[in-house]
Image: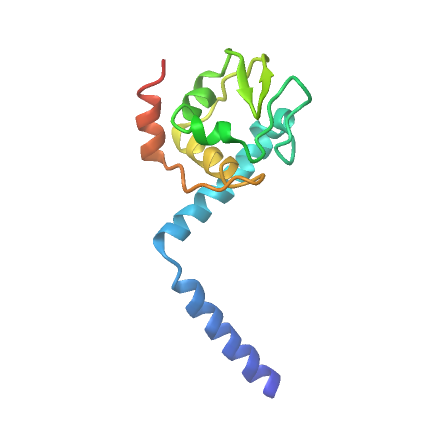
Length: 138
């Protein structure tokens, strides 16, 4: 009987805590979890399960300043691919990244996941930001 009461009280407390999450936290979790699934399907084959990249061919996505410094260009890289040599963590990468066939909301989700995984910490990269950035692609 005591176990039932304790379980009931814990369930109520858990419900209260969950319902008290901010809209920002809920939005982040939606973007992040959808982005994780998209990363596995579209990005993991090249960038690796843990964002480690592939030797000198494909840059890592792990705790990189490159992601922070180029945040506003990342949506364009996903949509259009990347052909220019880049310098990530002091190492040059000359490989070509093909365009991802993703909708803007999917780009936002992948970017939220990548920028908050593999040692990276950022906020949501939302659909409004991605649409604005895609409008400025060169």
